[in-house]
Image (cartoon, rainbow, N blue to C red; front, top):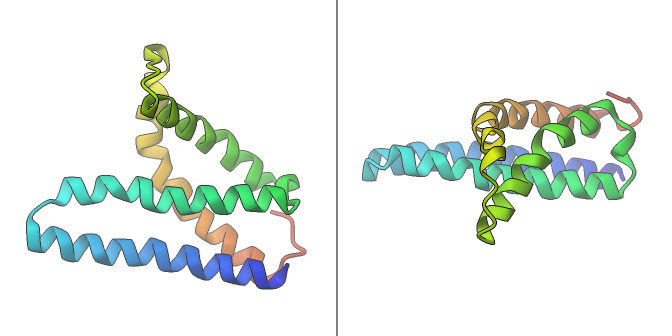
Length: 125
């Protein structure tokens, strides 16, 4: 368990900051700032979603942060998944707008959560 938590933490840190560095370099070279930063939501969020689902399978669903993270992030991913299958739910569009602002904040806090769990897995947050 401790090994998984350490590996997960380092993957999350690498993807988060690696993509920021990649986006800064790419936006300077191609002047595509908005396009590159928009993919940040999918790249970092996708890795965090996989990590989140693995943590639930490993029994971390009891943590308060995991519950809050799930309530705030899962509806956004479900709406995006439905949109990919051309199932348009217009009344729920505000969830995507809400996610535009909360996703980066939750991604940042998820890094802190991963760090705390990697350093001390017994502590419940």
